Image (cartoon, one colour):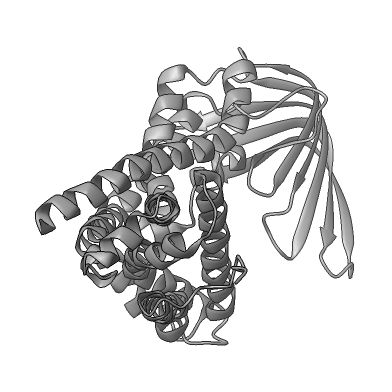
Length: 378
C-alpha cells in the first residue's frame, strides 16, 4: 500500500518538476539572448558560437532555476491532492501528512544532488569555458563590438565613437576614445584614424591612433595635460576585452573548490575579496540545501491553499522563491563587506527555510490552517 501511495504522489510531482525546470531555463535563456541575438544580426558571431555560449551558461541557469522548479512541483502536486479532497481521504484511512513525505524527500534530495554536483563541477567548467570562448572571439574578431556613429564600449572602461569603420582592414576614421581603466587618470583621445592590431602570442590588442590629441585629466581635477601625437598605441589585455559579451559570473564562480581554497589562503582574511570567495564557496552547499528545503516547504503550502487550479500554486511558489532569493542577495551584499561573517550570513536563508518548514509542517499536521496567503472562512 505504501509503495503504491509513494508512486502515486511521485507521479503527481515529477512531471511538474521537469516542466517547471524547462520553463524556467527557457525564460532565463530568453533574457540572455537579447544581446546575443544582436551580435548575430549585426556583429557576425556565428550560430555555433551562440550555441556554445548557451551550453556554457546552462549550469548556472539550472542551479538558479532548481529551487523554483522544486517548490512549484511540490506546491502544485499537493494543491491538486487537497483541492480534490484526496488528502482528507488519505487521513481518514490513517495516513498522516508525515507518511506522505518519503516521495517528497526523495525527489527533493535528488534536486539537492543535482544542484550540488552542478554547482561544484559544472558551473566552474561552464564559466571557464565561456571565458575561453570570449577570448577566442576576441582573437578572431577584435572589432566585434565597435559600431559606426554610436558610443560603444568594446573593452572594459574604454569607450569609442567612430565616424567610419572598416571591419575588413580594421581601420577607424574620425575617432574619439575615452580610457578610464586607470582610476587616477582619464585619457581622452581624438584622432584622424586608428587601427586595430592583434598580438596573439602576447595576448594583447593594440589600438594605434594616428595624428591626434590626447587629453589627460586627473580624477581629483588637480591637473590636466594636452599631448599632440603622430602615433599613439593603446594596449588592451584580453582580460579587458568585450564587456558586451561578459554576461557571465564574477571570477570566484569560475573557480573550483580547490582553486577557491587556494586563493583564499593568499588574500587577507576579512577583506572583500576573501569574503566574496567565501560566499561563493559556501553557496555551493547552501543553495543545494535550499533546493531540498524548498521541496519540503511546498508540502504544507500546497496542502493548505484553499483554491483550485495550478495558477494559485505557481503564484505562491514564485512569491516564496523571490523572498528566498531576496534574502540570498541581501546576505551577499551584507556579508561581502564583512558586516556579517559569511560563514554565518550565507546560511541565514536556509535557516529561515528550515524553521518555516518545521513550523508549517507541524501546524498542518495538527489540522491548523495557514492564513499566511489565504484566509479560510469558518
